[in-house]
Image (cartoon, rainbow, N blue to C red; front, side, top):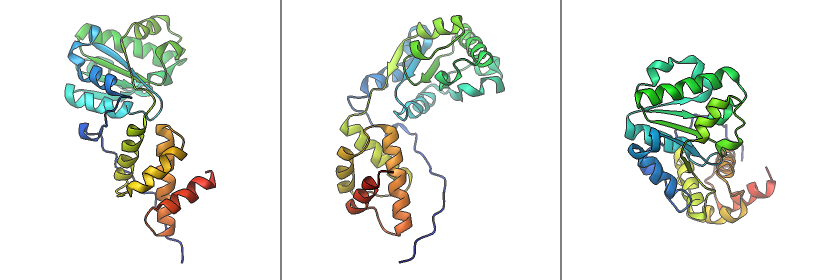
Length: 223
């Protein structure tokens, strides 16, 4: 059989509250984020491993708070005075560590939000103490902020996230495939994303639905 042509089409990711799955691994963090009107000093740091759902939860929060999300690396491209007037999520704050200009902008934005009383959500990988922020005033402000942590995923969450990622790709996956791959794959959200992409590509190449046999071949290939 001739191989199917493969096109890299954009994947629509669902960011609704109904698409965020709550298990023991993330229930506490979700509760803290959803209780945002009672955050100490009106701010919170949300941390967790890559692909743990920080962006998804941040989008849920901005829907609840009528706020906006901005990438920390874009802080020099926006009007800090303007965006500090309403609820704001600054994503990937750990990525600006060591960048003097961006750290200064983040510090200024933090202070503006505190002055206006606008709630501020900051996200990053790993606890702030290991982000290696160079600006002492910014480091102290972040480390003095309450933390909500999305922990490593359990089986229930990995299962739900995998099914969701297949759904984002408009693939109705056979539950037997998910049951087969879960104990054999890298047990992380990045591992789920990588495997879903590989299985999707293998199915497109073969022109067939994803099966347990196909999943075994993909896993055995070691890619």
